[in-house]
Image 1 (cartoon, rainbow, N blue to C red):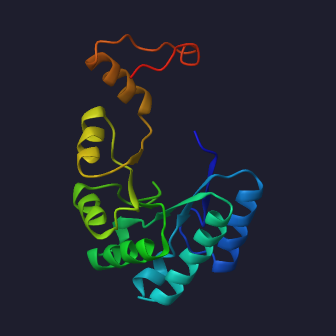
Image 2: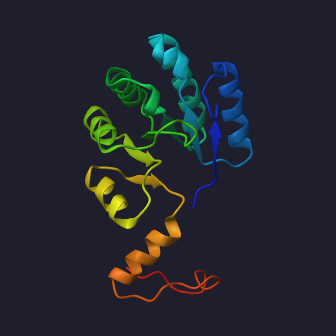
Length: 183
């Protein structure tokens, strides 16, 4: 597990200078992955120069320190054209992931959004689904769409179900660290 934190959370409206300062401090504090919220008001107003510069500032700081960046779009507020342009910008700037939501918006990951994000992001940019993936079948479905990571609050249940389907016993609380990984 990588040490991670959020930048510009939860609404993305912090100035670029504040997001850069948050990123620098996160790196000093040991952050290895930064989840940055894009400035949604700037996206909606079409101020793509500002959006690009802001994302670049955080990515440059993180990558210079060997850390990775997930750019959160908050898709529930955006039109497809916004999402596509964000994917293009993230690809140009070499973001490590594009991510669907913070969990604070009115919606999470949808299959349509995940398909769109995968289609419009270059292969070097991974896609993370956040919000709405609540069971193993949903996890497997988004994985089939090209999602490489998923933010979920029900991970333990998903893992238990995976172990059940594989014919493995459930891990009891406190045993996880003592058992070797099974592949």
